[in-house]
Length: 238
Image (cartoon, rainbow, N blue to C red; front, side, top):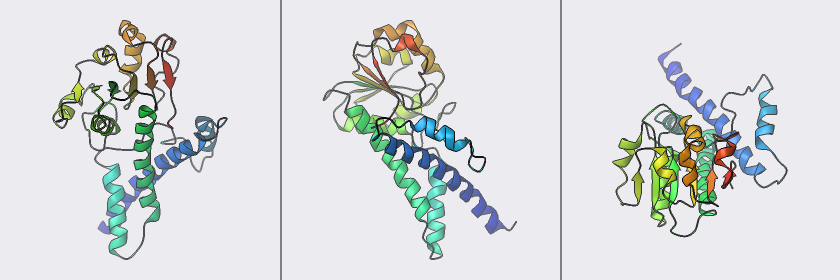
């Protein structure tokens, strides 16, 4: 393989994966408008086709990190530099941006003006401290801009995220249990750390105000009934 082919293969691979992620999220947006449509069941059926497969064909939030967004944009730039349009890659980015906006709309529609919101997960994926293009960080900043106090947590990315929250409205807590004690009207799980399932099973979950909403796009809390006996559990986005 030539050097040019190797470079294009690398960025094209990530473009193909991100298109798959955005396809799942596009389907999610359509299904949200049909009361009896189950995007998870549909994706499970689609993934059984061996030409497609189940990898990255799951509901959650958009892609982030240092590689996927960069390589998708680099593919667009590379194509356009030789006079070729890259509409699939461009649409993949647009769908990804739309997922963030849907997340924000889902949170705002379930909170009172100016009420505190808890955000659990600041890394772009579990088991890293990287916050590049993180949905959790973006949500914290967007809520703070709209006047909401935000209490956030991440198992590894809290310190690095704290350095970019400069408006005083976002507080990064030491533990997820601390977030649950902050009288929030809504909690959003924006990174599927396994530990969040445990904290919602723990005694700390008793401190969640009755009537609060837990927005759980990754379905982290599936089959955690003790956490959901006095709150609304929302797995889909508006």
